[in-house]
Image (cartoon, rainbow, N blue to C red):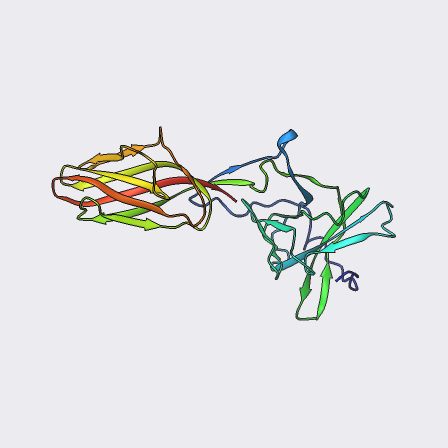
Length: 266
């Protein structure tokens, strides 16, 4: 869609560059990277779109024009409906891939990371959607834009997420084990163990057969044991094998809970 469709004007109440509060953080703890100074190595054309309460609620796309002339007479353009490559959306707390059906109008912003528009002097952008009832595309006002700005100060990673995985052993015995694979890279930060019944239990964790905590983590009955210092081999690579296993048991332990804390970038 290189040529723009006949314009049907969106009223000022439908799409405006005004902020509203939307989306709250989930249970994960998010650490945002602002991307400033020399550390900012991911750049993009930022589209600071915000939905207005009571306006159009649905999927929208974006067009960006760039030109060396202020009247955009010979502008080059990109359109998120044509291709979603190099487009990202900001959902309110994380950058994510741009959906082929368009961005939900309640999301915060979008950006374009491609190089098609690099080196131009003037930029502008607008949002639009398809009105299925009337069979027309409805366009918002053009907003002034700028060239690429810092989107992230950490390569392709813009958000650090802290999360955990847990394992429960019932009536554990020495050498009981549980293996798992994770579909992402991450850094393991702590091993936590809870002992229910008996006297104590000791748990060890291996990352691709390499011990993360050589001595293991021991918990006594009715309490937690935790180790977050002096861990080794904590860098986990996607689809590697993590093995959680019982190293020692004292008394009749009814159950043992194990939590692996980690963080990852998205």
